[in-house]
View (cartoon, rainbow, N blue to C red):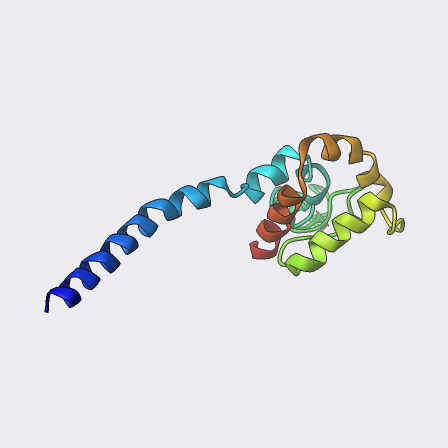
Length: 138
């Protein structure tokens, strides 16, 4: 009887230590949302990676016809991809391919313009965190 009590007490103690230590491990993980803003991704891909889109409808005062509708891309940002909801591994691989020069189509040149900033600011783990954050945005 004493052995089983000792075993249960030991297991409960170990579980208590793990539960106390677990939040500290989570705190060490980079914040993908904060990094998305810090790394200036927001400037081309929008506040949540959903693209740079209009916030409201706008009608022409004279004709009453719509000039644009809420959700339409903003001029100059039509070709920037929407990243929200994409596969995490796909997003990470695309970032790696663009920064390495393996991918050089589309607007990847715009990302190469910030490569020096990314290299000096973000680690590989940070890029993975950004990819994870974007994959979870709906």
